[in-house]
Every structure is written in C-alpha cells, then in structure tokens.
Image 1 (cartoon, rainbow, N blue to C red):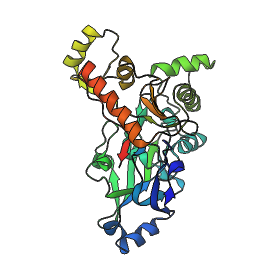
Image 2 (image 1 turned 180 degrees about the vertical axis):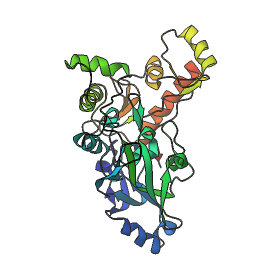
Image 3 (image 1 turned 120 degrees about the horizontal axis):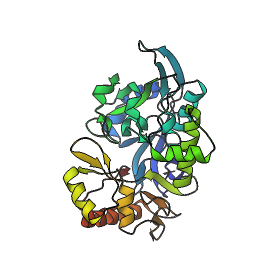
Image 4 (image 1 turned 90 degrees about the vertical axis):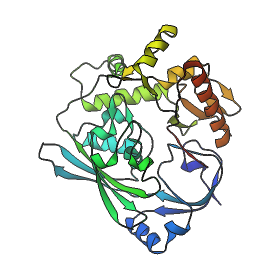
Amino acid sequence: MYPLKDLHTFHCDVYADSIIEIMDVSQLDELFQDHFFKNTNWMFLGGGSNVLFLKNYEGTILLNMLKGRDILGETSDGKTILKVASGELWHDTVLYSLRHGLNGLENLSLIPGTVGAAPMQNIGAYGVEFQEVFHSLQAFDIITGETRTFFKDECRFGYRDSIFKNEFKGQMIILSIQMHLKNDGYTNVDYGDIIKTLDGLGIEGPYLPGQISDAIISIRKSKLPDPDELGNAGSFFKNPIISIDHYNKLKIEFPDLPGYPVNNESIKVPAGWLIEQCGFKGKRKGDAGSHAKQALVLVNYGNATGEEILELAEEIQLAVSEKFEINICPEVNIVG
C-alpha cells in the first residue's frame, strides 16, 4: 500500500495499491499496449488539489509528472502561443508567463494544482475563466491509444466544467495545453477587491499584469487557508446559478443576497454567502469544518476522513436547500 496523504491537498490518511510516476507520454503507450487501462482500476492524479478520497484507493494511481513549457510563436492576431505540459504547477506557469511579458493569466494567480486541471475544471477566479485564454490541448485516448488534439469548441467549457469531466471522464488523459496570451499589458480589474487591494498596496493605475498578480496573491492568502498548513481543496462547492424570478423572490426575504447576472434569465449567487447564512462559517465537526474566513472552503483540521468531510458537505447542502430552495453542487471530485 502506498500513502496518498501528501499527494492530495485534503491530506486524508488514505492509501493506494500502487503508484506509477508518468514522466513521459511513451509510458502511457506502453501501458496501453499491455492492456493496463482495460484490466486495471486506475486514476490519473495531478496536484490532488480538487479531489476528496473517501477511502483507500483500490487500484493504481498514475501520478502526473509530465513537465515542460515552450513559447511556440505568434498567431495571426498577434497573440503568443504558450505550450505547457499538464504536470507543471499552474501558479508557476502564471509566473512564467509574466516573466516573459505575457498577460492574461494574472487573475488566475495562486490557484493550486497542475496545468492539466485547468481545462478539466475550466478554472476561474476574479473575473477571468481559463477558456478565455485556451487555444488547444493534447490528450491520450485510453480506448484507441491515440493522442488527440482538442480545440475550444470541442471542449464544451461551462462553469467549472468541460467535456473531460463528463463524456470523456476516465477516457482522456490531458498531456499538454496551448494558451494564446497577449503582450499588450491589458489588465482586468473589474472584480471589486482587486482595486481595493491595489490601493492598500499603494499601487496606482495604469496597472501592470504583475501588479494584478501580486494583488490576487494577497487577496487569496488573506481569505483562503494554505493547503500545506490546513488540508483543503479550495472552494468545495460551485456557485449556483438560479433564475432571475427565484432570485427576486429571495431578495424580498433576504435583501442582502448578492447576485451576479449571467444572462437575461439567470443570476449567479455566491455559495459562500448561502452557507454562511445557514450558520456553517467556522463550524467544526470533529476535524472536519468550514473555514472561519471563507465558508465555501471545507477543511481538514488534522485527522478528518474523507467520509467525515463529505458528511459535513451533505449537511451544508441540505441546510442551503431547505433555507433558500437552492441546490449547491460540489466542485471537488469525490473518489470512493
């Protein structure tokens, strides 16, 4: 049995039958030829920053160690293509882009995990989603043994969602991504806390991409626990999207309810606010809890099991449903 405690950010005390470090795509070819994918229970694991193991994993963990970054050149519209292997850390990639004078990723600073999770989850933060900078990706198809290229329309990106979490879940192993980034210095400061933080840091506009990154890092560190110090996977739930009619009815009873228009029919509501209104912010059950500064983040205070964390999550879901008639769904991949 191989320990997984240090290979996922919830740091639950779980084990796998075996672990194979994938350092080159040729290893996947060899596994395919050996009928590994047909005959073995397996899981491809990156940074483990968005997974909750409920129990020991009865199978083989393929640990993503694919590395490499390369600037490929410019597109016809003047953007720069950056290719990154899926095993590289996401935040290190953001910093790499900034060092090379590229902008577009700075609002996604300090998101934990590896690059492969970015298209899988369509990660997003502070007014920016990954799909906005996505160009294409390469993925290994475990059924055919072929390496396939996917362009944006084929990925079916949605809110924290993609085809790789649905139709192709467990079939495609993401190997690398290409992003088209600008070098015009444009920055997105629409998210309210960014300007406030920049002011607090004594920074005046026009803002540089690196300054936006610094502000985002400051915001995240002030609100979110460090997984190396307190086990967590960041936001445990997605922010729910509800109809405008439902939102307007709730506003009568809850006038402080925040909402962010998605389109003419729907509004996104902060799950953290809903959870806090249900009294869970800072609440602890044994070593499982909701973080004191951000109710949306469920944490492991030391020895919580995955099942105990899930039990708390389900209690929160029920409370939110009963109080607001809103279903909040986990963003975290629950294994077990």
